[in-house]
Length: 112
Length: 116
Image (cartoon, one colour):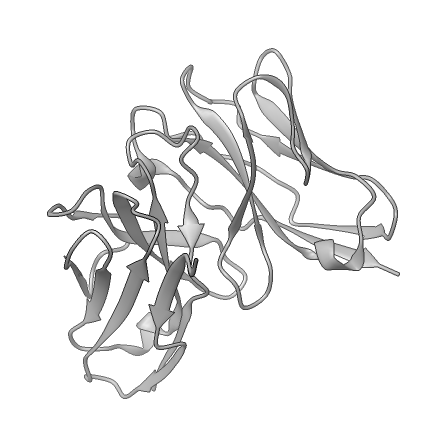
């Protein structure tokens, strides 16, 4: 199983760029990296997914180095509404969703 | 488009009581899942259904049963509730089970269950 390690919490201020790094040293060749966001009293929401290099969508960017042993979620110009827990997941190739593990995630607090 | 709908939103049970948590999705997804989330922790998979007619155990299945009633609905049953089952329960669905690529999980907003 590809275990992930993320910082427990982070603080930022409105307008700043936030980078959350996730370590996944034993990622398998066919595994994808997926990030979810969870607000209080809501279920997690898919943010972005990638396999290698860089992926960008309207919400975030995901940077994955060549060795794929880590990944960085980048949130540009955060606002108060980005305060949430962010989960990094690795897997979903051959093992299926029964092997995907949600860790404790990273609690991001955005301050005025 | 409602996505994933869970009922009820809140429930209080006494130890030993039974109840069924309901989940329905309107995205025509093949796969459905039940997770629990305890305070300050991530989500743990209880059961999942890769496709209509199949169910499999996840990480923490003890004390629970599931039914994939049809493609849309996946219910979770607690036969004899225990205080250790106090948690927030999330239902999720995805288009495909065996690959996460381009098949993200879509979650409901949860059922908050307290067992006294």
